[in-house]
Image (cartoon, rainbow, N blue to C red; front, side, top):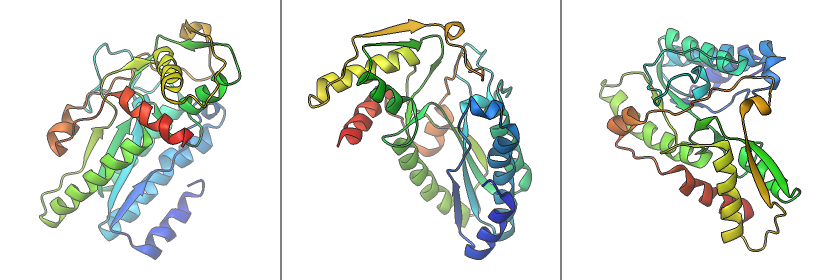
Length: 262
C-alpha cells in the first residue's frame, strides 16, 4: 500500500470478485509528522484499488473511521453528517473515501471506531500490559466512543458481503457508506476500568499490579494529534439495511480478553 501502483498489477493479476481493504496507516500521532505516507496508504492506494475494481466489476469493501468527523456534535454521527477531520490521520482517510466514491466502482465503505483486538497494537493490549507493570494509571475521560472488536468487524463484513453479492447478481446493489461499531458508548477511562475488572474477575492466573486508575482531561494528556471529543456513530442505517443489531461494547471486550489470555 506504500506503493499504490503495485496495487494495480495485483488486482489485474488476480481479478478478484471482491476486494476487502483492511490495510491502513493507523498511527494517529505519528501521522502528524508523516502526512505524505499516511495519505499514500490511506488516500491514494484505496483510490487505485477502486479504479481497478471498476475496470473488472469487482466489489470494494473499505474500512474508514470516526475520525473523519470533528467530534463537536452532541448526538451520534450519521453517515450523512458533514465531515471535518481535525488530524492528519482523519484527513488521509477522508481522501480515501472520496477517491473510492469518485471511481465509479461498486463499493461499501464501513466507518468504525476505537478498534481493538487480541493482537497487534491497540488500547486494550496497551492497558493489559501496563496493568501488569504499574500500580497507577491516568486515562482520559472526556472523549467518548464505542470500542469495537476487530472480530466483530470481520463477522459483520462477511454478512454484508454475502447479502451484497446477491444484490449485485440481481442488479439491485447501490454503493453506500455505513457506520459499523459496537452499541452504546463509553470513554477511555471507563474502558480501562472495564478491562481491569474483567481481568480480575475472569483471569485469576493473571497477576495485575494496578491499584488506581485516575480520570484526566485531554488537556492534561496532550498528544501530537487532536482527537474528536465525540466519536459516537449512529447504527440505524446498518441495522435497517442488513438486519444487524450490534452487541454492547463491554460484551465484546470480555470475549476479546478471554481470547487474549487463551
